[in-house]
Image 1 (cartoon, helix red, strand yellow):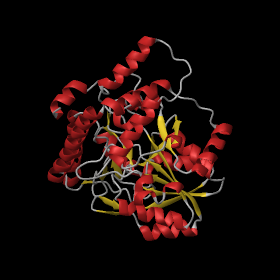
Image 2 (cartoon, rainbow, N blue to C red):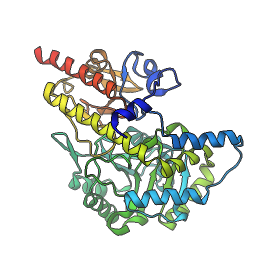
Image 3 (cartoon, rainbow, N blue to C red):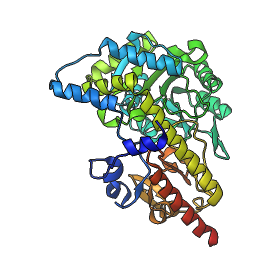
Length: 412
């Protein structure tokens, strides 16, 4: 399906549909009239395979106790093996009500209060919350950044792992918001350091389906032929790929029998959740018949990214568009446009502090609701994250606004 046809067919109005992204702008950003380019949610109707499967179950009209059918294992494992090089075993699978709840469970299950938990920053801000809310010690390893590209500082990574006596490493793969799709050699180097210092790895792979160009996502347990799989817990979901977040369903894969035993013991005491039937049905349908829809969506996102990068390079070169190897949420570096380094004032946005100057530029003048870099890591103020899983019309409006106000700054 060509991009234009996909947009015509699937673009949907989200206003006044009980939509967090659009309908809570006043509550979260203080202004109901901003263009929402923030939270990872789309303006596209999900694929018919999913809605058809859900309608069939709704028509059946019974929503009693259920279980995981063999067909779910088959479809999920086929998808993982075909796309990401890892064939799980049936006994590895557990289900969760979402990736973020699972992160909290893992932190509580595999560490003790006061233990150190490390992550690469900037990173999705619930990673931070999962550590601090659970009374663990947050250890952040800032990535190297140069000309729109993020890389791991392996010397710093090992130094922190050793000196902070890290017990758990939370990996985001592909990385949100740095846009990295980790190469196998990068993953192997991180995992070898974790092995050296006896650190468990939790790999959030919810963006696994969003890779672009020649980038290839590798499931963490598959790295180096499975050498490190017994210290890895993987969590993923179809929710980002097919816009199913409200169905609160995700997959946990635990290759190690010992780690499974610990998780199951924790779950028995603290996490008496059951199967979300509709989430299960939607995920199976997505991985059975949704691939063509997903590839068409990715072509729209890729074109949106190319447009942003080319237009800003030509008309607002002060703004650096970071590489988007994966995810649909690239970072934009606005530090040459807005002086955040000397800004002493902040504004609370989405319950978090933001540089007043940056907020004034992005929200008051560009009229955009975005995720701010400081939310992902304290040293990334001046960056914003832009959601490109939306219509070309919305992307054009956002870019036009950024160009217009950058020209105003340039003329001062």
